[in-house]
Image 1 (tube, rainbow, N blue to C red):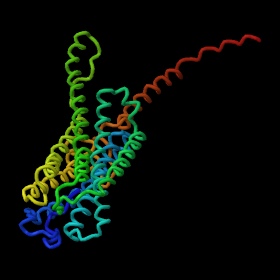
Image 2: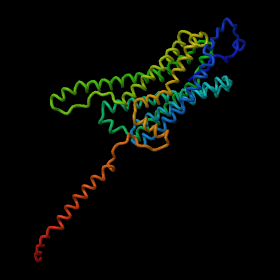
Image 3: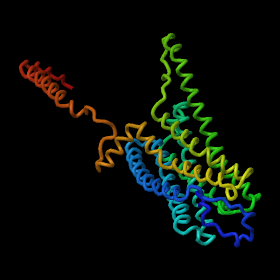
Image 4: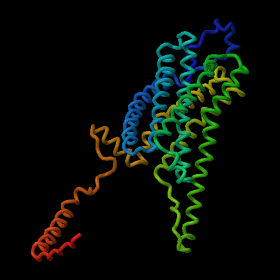
Length: 364
């Protein structure tokens, strides 16, 4: 996904063009992308690993499908950071200067697209699950459970892996001086549809339905109370719903610039020939990859059980899932003493009263 800056492209002699005809764009940012991606990798991978461990604990304790979906999103983000940032950018670009075999270069490109698709589309089942939970709660109790969530996650990962195969023929936008071909057009539109337009449409529709349902419940609550009927749950943006809206909104904002730049490169001006498009593509890629490292902070900001699980992981303990409360065992001594005392009184009363004479049995 992250293509190399145009600082290691072939010379004018290799392309057979004069300097005035080539008009090759330069990497304006210099080494800033290398520093940025190195910091993002050093922060993002440990943070995502910590998130995965905390979510694994929550999933094993609560047996909720929600945490399995979040765990799939985190795992896909880790793959994206390893394949796209570490292998695709830092190794191929900064270390080897893309001086690697063409077959390996295209194979890594297909793996990068597959990891990218998995990172984005793992959020879609989470959105569908939250929509069913809020809008169709009875149906959610029947269809949402860990076994089915694991099957859905496996299907999403398999389809994501398959969707990365066509991008084996993805054109190097940084180095190709020729205009985009018909194959480039098909691959670019397929790419922006898979990674942005289609998932964002699903997010927009389902999130709108969720908010609409909650607002309808808010309007129905006073009417239900006036009629003396049992009111529906009030309009309340729960923490899980708020976290979902935050995840999808951050994704839509961070990936929008890259989608616009790719389409601009296709129809208006090439990245290879215009340094301004080159700069915009650099910055948009940096914003897009930031999406792989921000979910941890969203979870910490919204979810109290997640913060507790992270604290337990950092302190190397298997602490409680929720804050400490008065356990039944702590109240048991008082109850047992009172019950024992009342039992002793009843027993002493039985002992002090004479036994009633037994009735003689009738002869059979």
